[in-house]
Length: 148
Length: 381
Image (cartoon, rainbow over all chains, first blue to last red; front, side, top):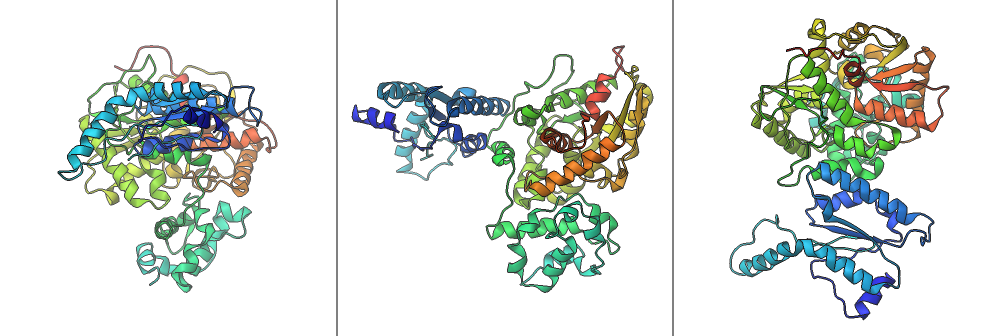
């Protein structure tokens, strides 16, 4: 969380389509947890953890790495591009690094965001379309993006 | 209000309270709080609310031993399923095993535009996009990822099935639009979800122009054969289990002699109790030279469930059932325990790894074993 505070103090703000979900340790993130986010139609999830060897709980980051790999494999089998699940290791003090990771990860969803912006304008006139186009989703330490 | 619909549908009103079900139930042996007889009795006598909030309704393995033995032919597993359906409506649910990973994988398959990758297909196997025969692999490739730590190889079973079909001269169709068969959703009371899966699965199979679907998984087979006609109007597909298909044309299969081995066979509930596929696996095992089949004390229709089902409620009671079953297999003196259901394989492997059993035994899948014993000679065509 401190990394996020550092980043926001430096003037970084998250995309409005992003939801931040703090967890105690990245190692607590479960495969099912990540998969369920995708099953809800969320475009992408970025998992952030501490550097390896820097873990308060001994091996949280390594464990999280394994979980992300496993999830990516399942996503791959389900036809969802593995790049939609991001994973970065960032230390508390690295606000800039967090900014870089989040912005870099968010780039792949840019077109989706723009489409959504257009849709938002159009919904002001006509009825809303089905929620098949989901927003940009990025997340951090813990994860997750809202769909609206 | 009460359970009229459930009672009438499953003929529970015929219950004599004789207790044969409880005597046969593998869960009741280790969990005195759970008794099929009491579940029915409570439902018949008590108000709806008291029964529905009972945690024990999620303990049933739906193995069907009670159904087989009930003198009044009460469909107890069906009753349990309807009870769960009702419990879900009031917000109760079973405790999912593996941190809900398996149900999350299933819900991923309901995403609009879901299209799986056929990356699990091995090099030597022949498949096609359209054809009269379809091979339904189901969740096998996904299980591969989740259960790698206990040495389970799901895609190997799927590839072995296709290899065996190729050997018989059949090149099956496979589809990227295939989804989960909905077995777990159905038996945990999520009938609507199961119906969605059923529609999607049938649609995917029909899109390949197939009339016959071959299964290597007993659960998918049972769903297509017995449950889909209830869920969907006129599925219009003929399901067939690969073991039936292989046993029918066993003269076409040429197995090479394997090193001498004593094996024992675990009957999956869905095949043995539900579909009467009892002789086929035994015929096929005997056809492999070098294998000697020894039966466990409780085999065939009397066989015991692998201890856990539908990915809900895996407690120490389930572990005890598994350990007891493994001990029974070890007592036969067999070197290898052969299973025909991926879930039996997973559950027994898990219990074996915990090391509470009286000895060691190797666990192998029947289809993989058959495919590996095939002669490298010419194919069936």
